[in-house]
Amino acid sequence: TSAIIAQGMRVRHHHGNGPAKVLVVFPEHTDFNTQLMLHDQHLLNDKMDPAQTLAIVCHEFGLLPLLRLYFAYYPPQFAVQFCETEEEARCWLSSSVGSHAAA
Image 1 (cartoon, rainbow, N blue to C red):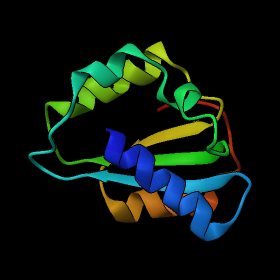
Image 2 (spheres, rainbow, N blue to C red; image 1 turned 30 degrees about the vertical axis):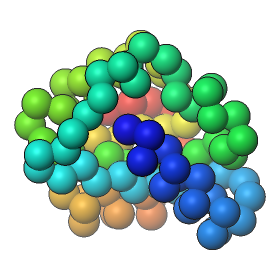
Image 3 (tube, one colour; image 1 turned 90 degrees about the horizontal axis):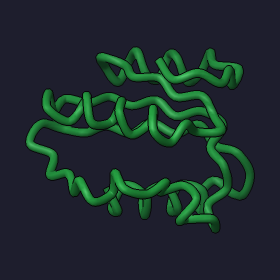
């Protein structure tokens, strides 16, 4: 959502410029604006540096298929991994070498 994009910008500002390893957690009852599915959000926010890797943990059951569909429509220029837990996501981020595939 737009709040997540804003958070991504803050993360990059806090950690400096250049590619970042990003962990996004969608809690249960996440409100998702389906209008965001109509555009490649990364291209719309070109002031953001590219992520090196993105790990996503989604606890909102109905949102996970939408996220997978979004990344299928707008394949990122960085590695994306859907994880069951934050621990799994952090482990993947720390070991990832930036392979370019969404799982």
